[in-house]
Amino acid sequence: MNRRGVERQERLLQALVSGGSLHLADAAKLCGVSEMTLRRDVSSRDSLLSLMGGYLVRRDDPHYMPTYDLSTQQMRGAEIKASLCRHALSCIDDGDTLFIDCGTTLLPLASELGKRQGLTVVTYALNVANAVSALDDVRLILLGGRYRRVSQSFEGDDMAAQIRALGINRAFISAAGVHPQRGLSCFHFHEVAPKQAVIETAAQRILVFDDSKWDCLRPAFFGALSDVDIIVTHDRAASALADIPDLIPRLITM
View 1: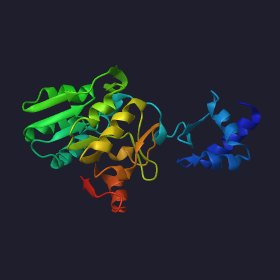
View 2: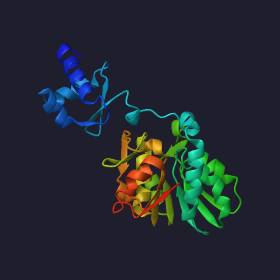
View 3: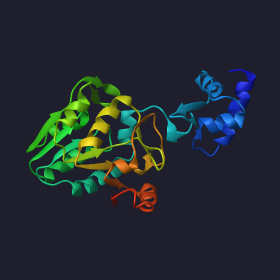
View 4: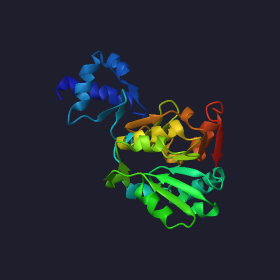
């Protein structure tokens, strides 16, 4: 990055000193250059900024961190995730066909399913499938394809079509980022198609997330807050969502 690029970066870092994001068009006006110039700055190896969905963010801002480690996520807030899943169980009736998303937030839900009868579980997550396979009286449908070790999930070109062909009563959806304006996002782009397919077709869509995901933006966008029927969360996120009841038909809090 040349001297002028460094100066522009310093100006933008100062604008983002309190966190948050800055639209590329606004950043270009602030620096008096074109959006293409800023795109070149950000693509530089020594850039301290990232471009996500048309917005500039600091690379060191944990709300926008671009990487995902399953082991770290599994240890983070384990008790809270288990409690959220116990609350989410209230949405499930005997005989339901459920979709359970990948990630660590919904994994504890599997241990709660024995309290219901005649369930069918649809998932593309290996860790969820392993947990569900040990349960009696639960039929498991595992959507397959190429295995992605980083998220213990599968991807396949026809996965969205498979989901649309199933009669899913309730879809339990996870998100790595839940933003009040920018909506729902995740780390991995292969998760977008199954998430969007189940949002489109499930009779009821239930978003479950812990407070650490609130006000965060991740690389892969898959939906808006208004795309879900029920949200199960706690603390800061629950308080913020309670202030916008028209957007969320039902809110379940710990």
